[in-house]
Length: 194
Image (cartoon, rainbow, N blue to C red; front, side, top):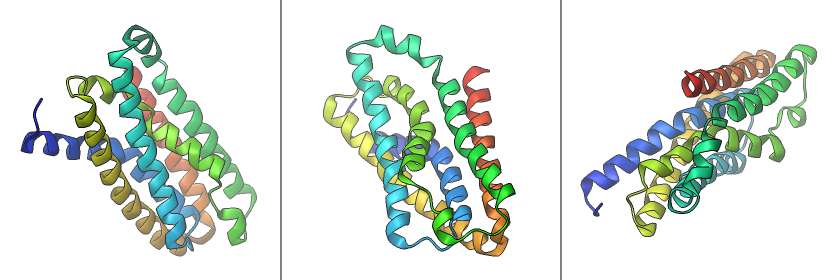
């Protein structure tokens, strides 16, 4: 593969495709925390971008080192994403149903939940390592960074949209956010298994 327009075009569209789950989770986070500040939005988007860049590189490394082990692990990716998102989404759903009125601190997305969300939404990006396996190390890194940038901006948009509607939906936002996360987990599972 060489440095050309097609390389950058493909990298951007890989980023868009991979960022859709992160966008949806960002939307749910914005719904859940409508008064989120810019620093928190950047942290959330940055976390998703980090994992979206990390996973293709791990996949690329696997292709160039331990491909036979990765192939056997790949069948579990939809299951892992399903369990993680069902856990996070179910927790949000239960909290939304049980707590009619919540203060702003309880609505905040914690670091542990954010890391789980980052892993769950990016674990399918491991398979991108196969897609970019003909790239050299520098090209694979650049592709992963482009994916990260695209993901970051898409997640900022998702958070902003979620915040806007989260304010209007008030206490129903946590329930809606939980349902969105569960739906994403089921979609990843169905797409990955069937």
